[in-house]
Length: 179
View 1: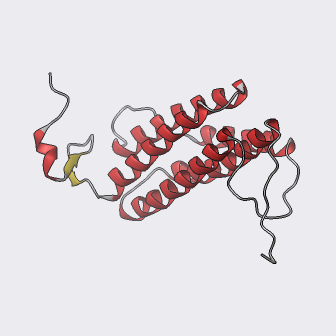
View 2: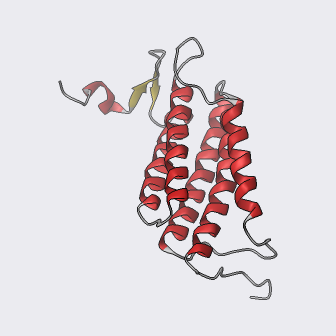
View 3: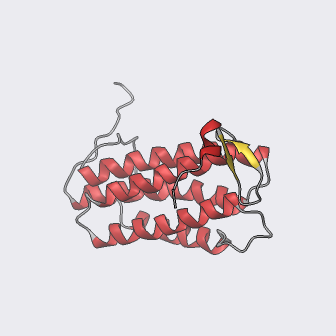
């Protein structure tokens, strides 16, 4: 069986409802950006020497698959959904990381160890996914927990990037307002 479908060669795709939509519709744009985020998180994990980080990345990737399934399936379809509990787990993880980090007093440049820098880049992809999701949210009905999740995720990725840099003894490079 071939993996490709020629019907999709003309700039359209289908949702699980069977609805045919353009590939640049907000839903495929969001799904594609979230897929990009997941792939980049997998790339970032290859740089980390810390099991806590790689385990967290795998958990996030599982959540992102759930999130994408939620986006493309109507509420009548039985697919894994992103739930309030996933957002609450994200908030708990953020809190746990922030308690172990020195307080921020200045803006930090996205840099540091390979894992830290890759996680900073993943954070920016997450922010783009959130912007794409916002467009989708105002065009179609979207599970509001997905919006909350992505908003929390970008903050968590910032904290995890900082933690990776601290573990690797990479100093944070800060922006001085006088520069």
